[in-house]
Image (cartoon, rainbow over the protein chains, first blue to last red):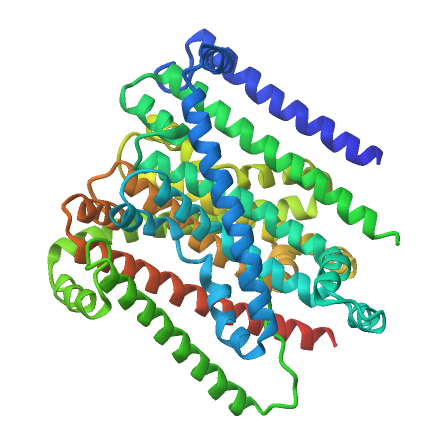
Length: 253
Length: 265
């Protein structure tokens, strides 16, 4: 435990001194502020943009898109996962596809999706689903695989209906795997949607960053960037801690 | 990733022919789906397979395509080699020096999950438009998975191996060459596999955002000019390359893993 604390301390110290170094470099003019602005300016710019409300529309668009994509990916991924798990033959066919899916840069489909669905929410949602749902499919499969046969026997002994078996036995047993899948799905959906907005879009946080970059507005760009990165780090951190708790609650039992 | 599990009662050749059959079924399914999307949208976004392949065949004879492909290949090769070597080195160091590894791992894992696209403007400001920015962005994507996979492999190594190396008084370089790398080979190949696809993604995104050369640029320009067969053909090329490379590396890593299992028993 002390070792973990020491690691945390050193880590924090390293990150803090890097930020301080950047701050000093920018303040003393060693680092050109046309390239990178001081961290304190980034924070100030982010707070300004949040307070003035100029980011509100972008925030609403981006997060609603991510949320829709995430929910669709989870529902679709679990349905496909359950289907594949049910039919072994289907699984033989789907396995190579799942194994190589993430080697394909899904993002290159985005221009095709824009041509297909027009510029707006729809292609971003589809892109988010395309990059997030396979993670859910894979984790659903491993989750269902991990349900011990004795649990299914127990369900049969108690003559549970299929719905009850699902709710009381299968889902709780598969939860840790599912949760990992959800975590991945959220971060893939986030990355996909923001990348799409960044490359080709007219709204959203990704677009705000690329617009600021193209109009040489470094201050706004770094402020928006910091906001996106903070949100991503906090979201991932919360899920990570939550996942750890779930795993710990199961392990002693 | 899910791993295939086979029961050993099936003979090897029967299993192979089964898998070949499955692969053919899969390819056919993809082609049917592709054709359906193509004809359903009347080719406004995706050109159907036959038309795309015909276009691709003529595209492959133009020098324009090859100059773009060469630009992407050059940036990608540099990014991949840099990610692989640096990642391997960092992973080995962080794996052996436990404390440094404990300090570094959460930072690396955190960096792995953030949307790195948003950082591309910073890369452009630092490196300027052109090859070096693309390479740097590719490395940003490819370096971390390679490091994390190598780190994990070294950490899970049976301690007796490193102790043996110490008893034999191997130098750090020799320990790396004769003990660490061979023992971690399956994981290293898996890291390479991930690093390969992610640095490719990084390079392509770089080209799509602001570049005048490369396959990513060709894809976006095909869409901007409403040249549907061009963008579909470029996507096809990239997808095929990615899948072939991934399948090969997956096979190599499975072979290494099997050999390691046999050596262990």
